[in-house]
Length: 343
Image (cartoon, rainbow, N blue to C red; front, side, top):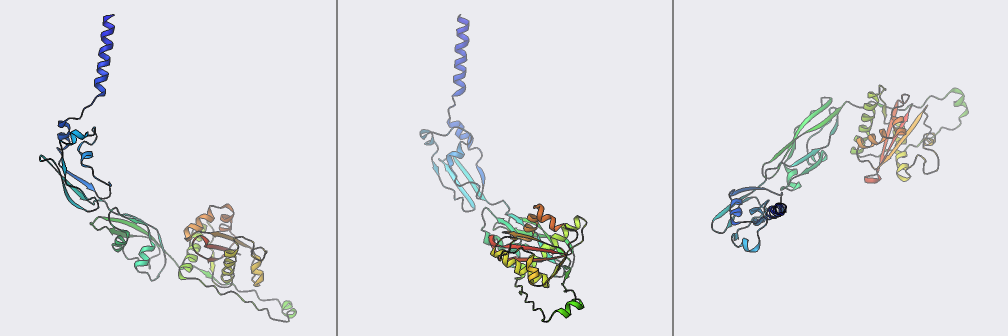
């Protein structure tokens, strides 16, 4: 009975001793053996000398803090060297540094063969997806963002080196993917010659008033990009490329885009189906198809969304289509895209 009692008492004593930990003056002195530290700018919001003193240890109570009176401070918003003194015995040398390169992500760039192109403030900004730094402002980073020249005489993909430096000389280099495309083949619609019988029956000439397309340079580039992307996809499926129409189909598709901006539907604002617009302007075709979309800002985005939709994908991959025309209207979330296909 005594033996059992003795074992129990010893067990309690060991458990009690294992749970108790008392911070000592020696522990604090040991924490200060490393007297130089580096703090990365922006990595922490404040520096507490006592937290550093016993990092990963129990905190000092108020009586124990009196053994290590602190003088000096650290300004984490300014790079440089700072000193924290603990009493008269220990001196902590703190260096606030910026050793992290900026973050830089780039979009791809699409150009036409022999297109006149140079890097300007606007063109540089157009290829940036993300640019930031923990210490340098975006405006100052933009001033230090550069890219190598692009050779538009060579068709195909190129990797152009771009780089950005922050105020402290940290540099980030990223390869920009540039696609230089050959000129897009274009087609013009020529109305068929009326038969002799039709000519005799007509007593008055038909007057066709087509709308005049009005596009910005950026919109025209996007129209060409859509065609390039569509033909690249068709090529992957062994299909013939589509010719971009810049004549009568182009003009009517521009009008159709204006209608879609008014009423986002394959039904026209006048209640008729979309294909009736070509009859209104006396433009013939064998087969036609229409894709519309809204809200996409880039050609890549709208083509990807069309390909993700079975019905729109079917139009893009129909073998009998030979001609395509593109319409664009609006901006932001209200931007609409129209594809018209013909054979």
